[in-house]
Amino acid sequence: MEEIVEQYGEYLYHFSYLYVKDRQLAEEITQDVLMKFLLHKENFRSEASLKTYLTRIAINCCHDELRKQKRKALLTKLIPMRKNVPSSEQAYLEIEAFTTLKQHIFALPVHYREVIILFYYEEFEVSEIADLLMVSQNTVRTRIRRARELLKNDQELEELFYEGI
Image 1 (cartoon, one colour):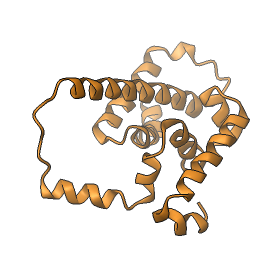
Image 2 (cartoon, one colour):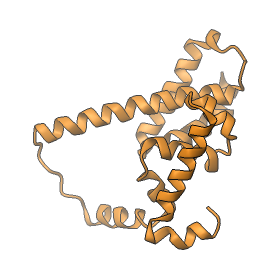
Image 3 (cartoon, rainbow, N blue to C red):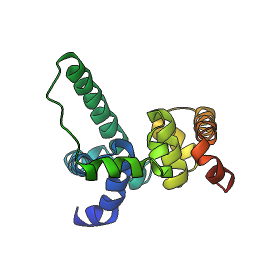
Image 4 (cartoon, rainbow, N blue to C red):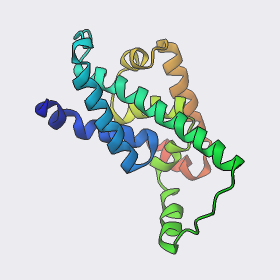
């Protein structure tokens, strides 16, 4: 198990972070993925690579966390909580963060964001992404195209887009 953690731990952390945009939550998800694999190792049939199998588990865990966050957000709208005033440092970091390509990708809907991350950052083939997400290859290609169009229509990213995204 130790070699699996060493080989895939960092990859799973970065992958989870790209989904949930929260370092601590990404660490928790990474631990959950590795624990689920450890507890259910016998379910791995070696039909796909171990990386693909762990990535599928990570996708499911990330989707679960995003659903939980959505429910929490709805609850806080219904039940107003005391508002935290962000520090000037936090405000600066938030403004700075929106100037990067990564933040623009984070702003995409999940179904577009995941294909962009898998295709461009993780360098999976369209067929592998289709298997991971359990959709057709044409759906993956369409989502990539639409995500690129959304990014292309963003004025801030227009110059970067033509330079080879």
